[in-house]
Amino acid sequence: LQYLGDLTEEEDYTEPVDEKVEYETEDTDKILGNIEINPITIPPRRQPRRKIVIDELMKALRSALRTSERRSMRKARRRKKISIHEENITARIASLYQKINDIISRLKRDEVEFSRVVERWERTEIVNTFLPLVYLDHQKKVRCRQEEIFNEIFIKRRG
Image (cartoon, rainbow, N blue to C red; front, side, top):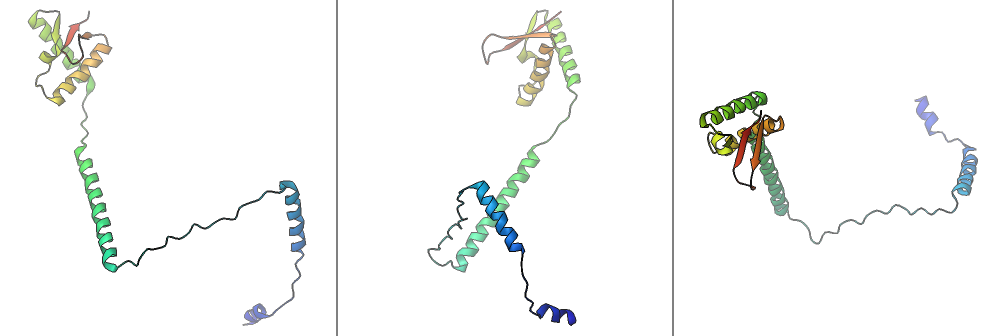
C-alpha cells in the first residue's frame, strides 16, 4: 500500500531533457534544411450505399465456402493425376539400340522407319521410344533423318 501511495503523490519534476531535445532539433534543422514532409493521410473509409441484410451476408458466406471447396477439390484432382514412374533410361536406350539392330539385320536394309520400331502407335509408346532414340542419335550410335516436318523419321545405324 505504501507503493500505491507513492504513485499517487504529485511531485514537481523539472525536465532538463527538453533543452537537450530542442538543441538536437535545431541541429537537424540546420543539416536537413527546409524539407517538407507530408503528413500521413488516412485513406477514406468506404461508404456503404445501404445496410446489409443478414440473408445477403449468409448467402455471400455460403458462396465463398463453395468456392473454397471447389478449389481444394481441384487441387486434390491435380495431385492424383500426377504419378511419377521411375524407369532406368540406360536400359531403355540399350534395349532400343538392340531392337533397331535386329530390325535392320532382319530386313537387310541400311535404315528403318521409326513407325516400324514403335510396337503400338499410342502416345506413351511413341514418347517412350522417341526419347531413347534421341539419346542414341546424340551418342552417335544411330543417325536420324526426316525429310519434312511431321513425316516419317528414318533411323540408320552408324559404325
